[in-house]
Length: 166
Image (cartoon, rainbow, N blue to C red):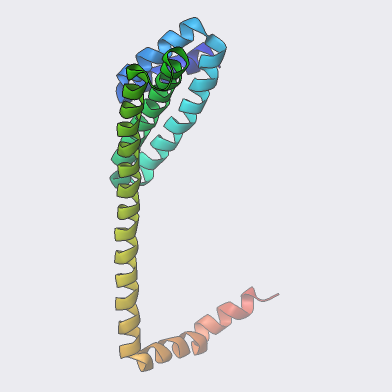
């Protein structure tokens, strides 16, 4: 990863998750190769987040929160593994680390459920719209038949169709 890309990812990370950006900077200083691999994965997630912001502003905020929680999960899982290795499974530090990790995992699940609810709401609106259109078409099939027949038999359109045929 180039220095410019690294700086750009860290700058964006500063705005989304300042604490995580600080932790990543430490990793950059201590283990640059590992940091670059991590930053490449983060960069991919940031690109996805930018795409969602452009295409779906309503879901973008939930996705941004999901991104932050995902970073926290990764960080806290590392903390849990370190305390487990250093103190063992029954140590208070390990139990606390696991409890904290569980809390953040629960937040991640809640965000995932919010995205699913948003998708369901959108699908329900789409289904309602399709049902309304279907009802309108069912209410006056003769008009639709006449319109289609007019399209098919209109001399100007017929000439245009003949020109397009090889």
